[in-house]
Image (cartoon, rainbow, N blue to C red; front, top):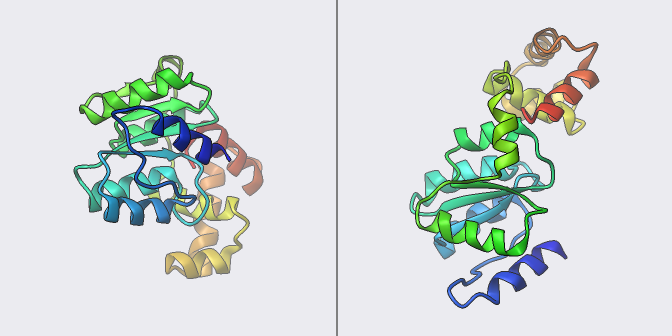
Length: 191
């Protein structure tokens, strides 16, 4: 419903055309490869194997001319830092007024960067993500409910290596256990 409402809102603008409205990160990558949009507006929490940030990175690799604008319901500074590392063009909260969203799309299309001001100030003071990219992948899958053998199969590792990663993650985050590590990393926007 929200995706449809957003597409309808953008279609009301004379200078904007919605070329696709999809539900998952992989579908967004595929649609961008076919439709070649100027700007892809992505939700950071897209379902499937690719979240919005991973989809943005993949779109950048496959369709370099397409810029990305990330939308999020949660103002997690870690997400902003990950978005900047993925070289997205903009990062806004879903609660932004419609005119701000439309202005952000236009600005990103012109090659400008757009950041939610309050979130940018908070991110300035946030500690850097202590997790390596591989540790983040392992923890992201664990957060989705995968056990060590499933994670190992998906990441082409052994179950023992996955357990070692999870132990290291718990220690790095000063967490009590895996669940606490997931909470800490999620609240910080690291996964």
